Length: 151
Image 1 (cartoon, helix red, strand yellow):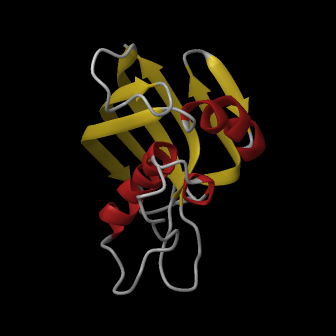
Image 2 (tube, rainbow, N blue to C red):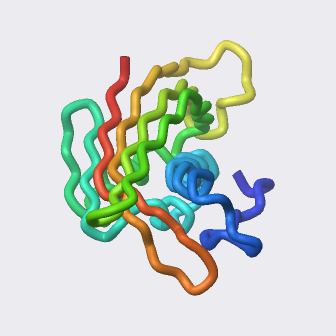
């Protein structure tokens, strides 16, 4: 999708409110998939993240890239996310829990705007544990553990 500009990985100043910064991790993951942007996708995860998709568990970012990004980013996709719920801990290790639902539209590469094409429409439930990422300009929460189940 060459016509879509790359989005910034780091949040710009002024800082986003913390809840918006938290939900931004899921946005970076899905927009990275939708626009075939590996840098944006990677920015959503810690290096030691765990990602589960339909019972397949991927340990660490390189495996998540192979098992998820390398397959999905090659499709024409659009993911619509809603019903985000954030439960932010104020103590301990500052892990935040977030859930969300989504609908994902998937077509073969280059076929998404053509009528009559074979497609896959999925309904997903995401649940995540996010850990804060210390950055020079702003907080950039990252997914430490993700479960994604299609319905």
